[in-house]
Amino acid sequence: MIIKDAIREVCMLSDNKRVLLIANRLGGVMKKILFFCMIAITLNTLFYSKALASDSKNSPHVNSEAVILMEEKTGRVLYQKNADLNMYPASLTKVATAIYAIEKGNLDDIVSVSKNARYVDGTRVYLEEGEKVPLKKLVQGLLINSGNDSGVAIAEHLDSSEKAFAANLNKYMRAIGLQDTNFENPHGLFNPEHTTTARDLAKITQYAMKNEVFREIFGTKELKWKGEAWETTLFNHHKLMRERPYEGVTGGKTGYVDQSGQTLITTATREGMSVIAVILKGQTQAVSYNDTIELLDYAFTGFKVFDIPKGKEFKTNNNTFVTEANKSFPISKNEKVREDITDPGVLEIRNQNQALIASFQLNKAKKPETIEGRQKEKQRIRFGFQLLERNSFYRFGVDLFS
Image (tube, rainbow, N blue to C red):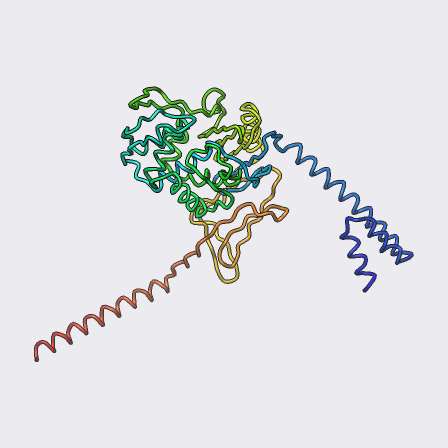
């Protein structure tokens, strides 16, 4: 048993020095067996290294400091680099401000612009102090033209002050599932405590894209604008939506302050697959857009959507669960998928390496109705009517003789 255990341990090792130490304690045939184990280990390591090298050749080559590529429906991360590093988002902050305003405010509200909003630094839509503007128009100015004055006006309208707004916005984002974000203002102007991660920005964008109003504004390329001090056409600042069009782009937001470098969020859809690309601290605009294109190309050439049809049943122990709608998720062209159902009815999709791709909560399948079951149900209904009739005659008799 000792020898068998030694062989089993050796064949699981990747450290050849430890293999030799064990081999020296054994002799004869056992040394030969260990020798062949060492060859197998070496060959396996070589093949594995080649596989990793092949994967790295196909991976995006990006230069920005932190990036993430997420599939929108399932949240599966297709690629990441420093995705959990705390960074400055600049105007990407406005994605969070916009969805918060859409969900927490009344878009028909008329907002009175304060002096504080009028004189905020940075990009503006040139609101005047005392100007009356619908909340929805402020959200449009915020996302399409990156208006910092719109951001301040929204914050003061919803929560009385920028400070109170930031506190409530942070609570809102934590409830959505963002764990590494702290915002100090509604616009993203530099504050050393105003930080987030590429992963959290992808999550808040994924959440916001479920909202129809947000999607419409986020994907607007140009908008006629008429204010007290400024009448113009607003053009979305995102170059892949206008000057450098990329097929399938559905929305985007740009950002920049000196401390953040170039920041960028892009959403795109092709052949039923929607993705979110986040770029943080690009050295130049060209770098941030090139990195985004690299990520989008990687998604749309390397992945496809796999569908599980509505009505498919999965059995576990004595229970049967069913998909009540089509379920879709992205897989790479080299992945093979396995479908596992847990006892509580969670459908887990894993690849050949057991990595979780997606999971879906299913409902129990309704038991098929049988002829015998229908007959029993009719008998129960008939019996109920008979009881009702008897009780009615009884009450009639009591009333008659009382």
